[in-house]
Amino acid sequence: MFDNLEDILVHYEEVMAELANPEIAGNQERFRKLMKEQSDLLPLVNTYNDYKLAIKNQNEALSILDTESDEEMREFAKEELTQAKKRETELEQELKILLLPKDPNDDKNIMLEIRAGAGGDEAALFAAELYRMYIHYAESLNWKNEIISLSENGIGGFKEVVAMISGKGAYSKLKYESGVHRVQRVPETESGGRIHTSTASVAVMPEAEEVDVQIDMNDVRIDVMRASGNGGQCVNTTDSAVRLTHYPTGIVIYSQTEKSQLQNKEKAFALLRSKLYEIELEKKQSAEAADRRSQIGTGDRSEKIRTYNFPQGRVTDHRINLTLYKLDKIMNGDIQELIDGCIAADQAAKLAKLNEQ
Image 1 (cartoon, helix red, strand yellow):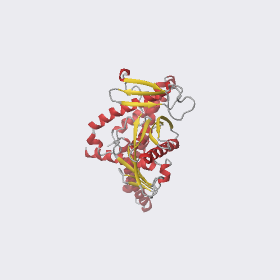
Image 2 (image 1 turned 135 degrees about the horizontal axis):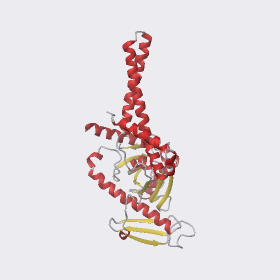
Image 3 (image 1 turned 135 degrees about the vertical axis):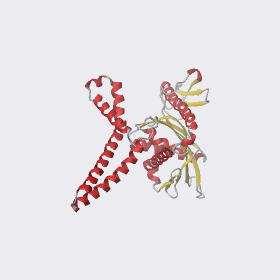
Image 4 (image 1 turned 90 degrees about the horizontal axis):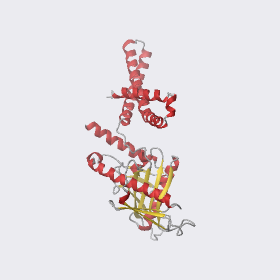
C-alpha cells in the first residue's frame, strides 16, 4: 500500500545530506527550498518509520508465540502483538491522510473579507464581532493582521472589513470559514425582547503574489481622493485614499487606512490580486464540482455554515453537525475545535472518495 514511501525516505535522506553540506549556506534560495522540503516531509517520514516499527514489533511477537513455551513470555507476546496491531491501524490512517493531495494554497497568507448581511445595524455589529473573533484567533497563533479597508456604520459595527492575516498555514486553517454566518439574539434596541436573526458573509481568499496573477495595467483605472472618516490630521487634507476599478470584472477596491497614498495603492492592488486569483480558483473548482460536493469548505459564500445562538450560548456548524456550548469563548477567538472538526470531515470525505476509485 505504501511502496512509494521507501522512495520518499531515500529522497528525505538526500535532502538532509545536502543540508549538511556547508557550501549550501552560500545559496540562500536553495537552502530555503531544502528547508521547506525537509519540513514538509518530516511528518510523513516520522509516521512511516513508526508504522514500520509497529510491523516489526508484530513480527517479533509472532516469532515468540511460534517458538516460546514459557507461558509468561507468551502472555507478554500476546499483549505486545495486540498493541502493535492497534498502533499499525492508527498509523496506517495517519499515513493515508498525510498522503492526500495538498492544497497548493495552504501555506499562503489570507485576505479576510467580512460583510454585514440581512439585519441592518445588528448585522453590522455581528460582522465586527466576527472580525474580532478571527483577530483574537490569529493573535493566539502569533499571526500578524492588517486592515486593508473598513466601512463602519457609526455605532461600532462594520458594514464591510477586509484584512490581511499573515502566518504559517493561515489559509489551511481559515479556508473553512467562508460562507454565511448567522446570529440569533435579542438586539439591544429591541424593547420587546424578541430574538432576531441576522447574517454576515465571510470570504477567505489566499493571498495572491504577482507570480500568481498578472494584472494588465490597461485594465485598471486608478482614482485618488481624500480619505473620509476618523483618521487624524491627514484625513480630508491630502489625496491619500485610492480606488481601483478593474474593467474586465467590474471589481472596485477602495483603500484609505494608511496616510500614504503609495501604501494604500499597494494594499488595494494586493486585494485586487487576491480577488482575481479567487475567480480563477472558482473556475477551476467548478470544473471539479462533482468531487468538491463531497468535501467541506468549498468556499461557497452563499452556503449557511454556522449559527451563533446567544440565548442558548451555543454555536452550531451545520456542515459537520457539531454544536458547542461555549459561545463566549468562541467569540473571543477559541475556534480551533470548529476548525479541527472541519479539517477532519474534509479529510474523511477525501479518503472516502479515494477508496471509491
